[in-house]
Amino acid sequence: MQPYPVVPRIPEDQPFIVRPSVRKRVLVFGGFLLALMAILGCVLGLGAIGSDNGPALLALFLVISVVFAGLFGLQIWLLAGGGPVLAVGPAGLWIKTRPSRGQAIWLPWEAIGMISRRRWSLEKMLCVAPRDPRAEQKLGAFTAFDSMVTQAAFGTGFTATLNYADKSEQEILQAVAYFAAGRVPLT
Image 1: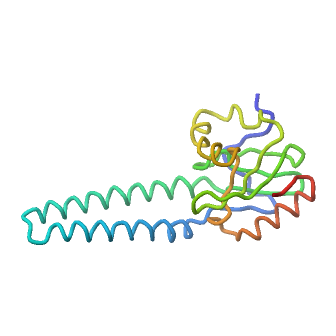
Image 2: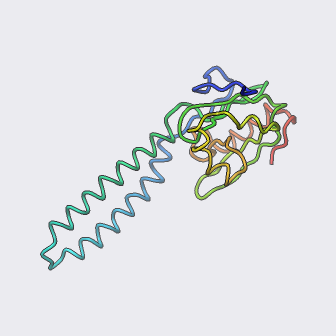
Image 3: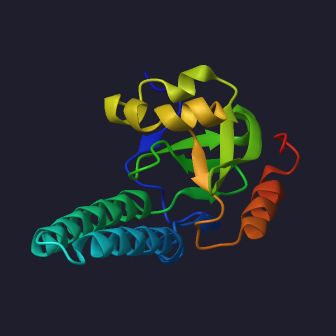
């Protein structure tokens, strides 16, 4: 039995809600994808000059472009779909249990051991470590698989983006500190 409520989506009735920002993700990762495709296009274009394989190289470039665009779209949909990533209030917080979909868990402030801010690659994360290790158990096989990377990188599967959110990092940290009211260490 899970000691804390788990729901398919964070409720919208909380005083402070953080949603993922599709626009920010598309701008950053879309820029990387465009740069990668431009480099690949130049390399394949140079290989096609004076070669009988020009049409084949163009077809290869188009296939690679479609595959990358599909993977990019899937990644954006997985990370930005599923509703809010964090909600805080006077009694505690809701946080997604899976980096890529909507399942969320309710943790009262007294059940949280520590909240920290960490960085992994380009992503800044708010990491919530529960006092009770049972909070991260029995959340489902897909959740266990999804959160393996965040568990390894941050020591907890409960993370929320700070820099790819609809609110600024400062706003999020101030709201968490305000509602936690000194009941949880913030590092």
